[in-house]
Length: 134
Image (cartoon, one colour):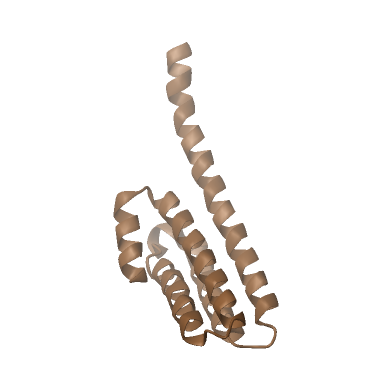
């Protein structure tokens, strides 16, 4: 299901927006997993966790190492570290704090991609604007 969401998002919106949306979905799923864990609904918590890690796995497997080089390699490592941290945190006594740190990292990553997207869009808009005023 998460892979279907990834494929659908990847074909219907610009790539940077898709990454931002998928990271947002991952954050939501991890929050739901934590809430379900705390309410002792472990099967539901596990399902949310598996969906969240599937999204991160999909993101890591769709990196272009030829074009992305060192950045793609770093993103691959980051996504995999987030997956492992999420799996290790599940069901542990310190799960709330661990999930909080993971979610904070994902939020920062999402905001970074949103900044890149906004910067690229504004730089593409400038040449057209300056041509009209010149």
